Length: 373
Figure 1 (cartoon, rainbow, N blue to C red):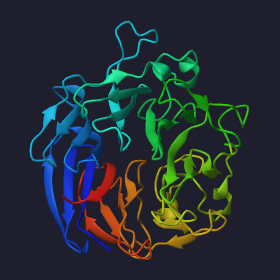
Figure 2: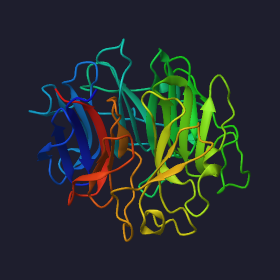
Figure 3: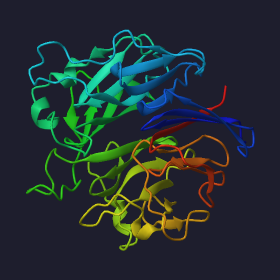
Figure 4: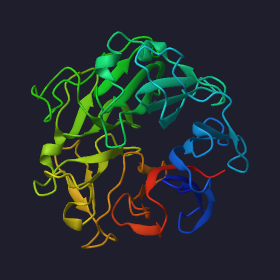
């Protein structure tokens, strides 16, 4: 069953909202919103369908959270955006918020944010005010796990917050310098979860922490199955296990298993999608060989198939950033991706074919899909 969808698009120079008809065939574009401002992430609250938050960096406000409670018709700035406490022992000051995550279904009004320099923040009032999560930000290991300098070309980041839908206390983080961290007490304490994840750039290729986890995702059909797109490959973990399996080794050698995002199928725990990028020596961050494609597994990563129908057959030198590839809950499942070249692509047949929905936008940082209001 399909339904009207909305895509929330964050870019280097503003935000857009795309809304579809019930067949996902035609799209109406609204925007730009906040033209010229950096929008790292743009989310809608699935618990009410109306509240929207943007992680924004604006010329006059600096790093902030922008809020709408009427589906994007009007916007206000958060009264107290994420900020490290005064006198922070590492001298950290938030440069920008990178990731926004609606809280658990049983906790209306709760949101989580990951920032650069790496930090974790929580709001209990719909994103209007934010508090530092001391269990991580003041952890005895924080200087080693999450040093404020280095990391990605855009700076060190806490790049993802993932909640176990069955338990609000169970939280995973993806970070650029500690790999995956896990909490079982809603952020009060944390442990690394990186066994068997390679660190090709460190003397010890399998350290307890130090990995660059680009993206993690729980399979909606089975939250005990975790997928990870890492700086050093594609991995899968089945809980309660703690040892990741590098399933990306089954990818074609000429393509490799480097990328930014992994999207699990909404109903099938064995299926997932990735969008590889060129991970050769100079890391040009483009589609391998200029031939963009999504790769799909239907057997838990044991094999991968190329899906490129609709994409340029050659001279397609874009890639997809870590927040810019997502799926919906329709049947058949829709896939949506935004490119570094400002294009939005979609598939309404679970990856069998893709078509371009929009072009000529600024560099796209994030795409999220949700049912239209």
